[in-house]
Amino acid sequence: MPQIRPITDLRNTTEISELCHSKREPLFITKNGYGDLVVMSIETYEEMLETARTDTAISEAENEYAAEGILLDARDALSSLRRKHFG
Image 1 (cartoon, rainbow, N blue to C red):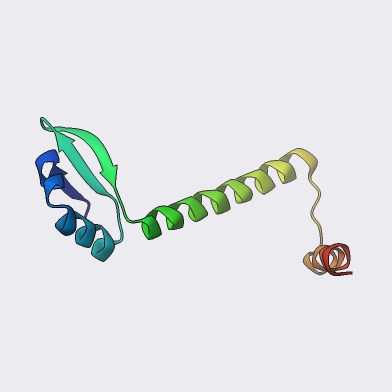
Image 2: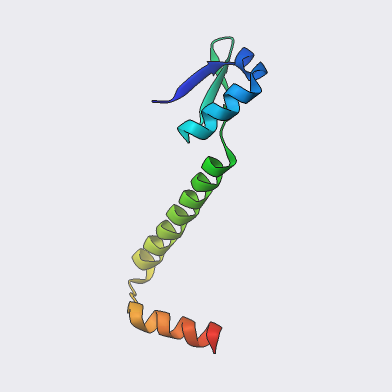
């Protein structure tokens, strides 16, 4: 369940930091009853970025396949990459 806190709670930096690290999810900050900020630990942020990168790569691969209809054999592709990058 997402944590929602008023902006005045940001005064308690240690509590906010501990909450972000323990929950490992974004903390939503409101101002005058409306969403204003999102706070999260660096670890959570990096995990979200990596997930977004992976999702983007998968989407690009799906679009490429839809456009060209060409599939590569995984063994051949990996073998080619090994030769190219590792001699």
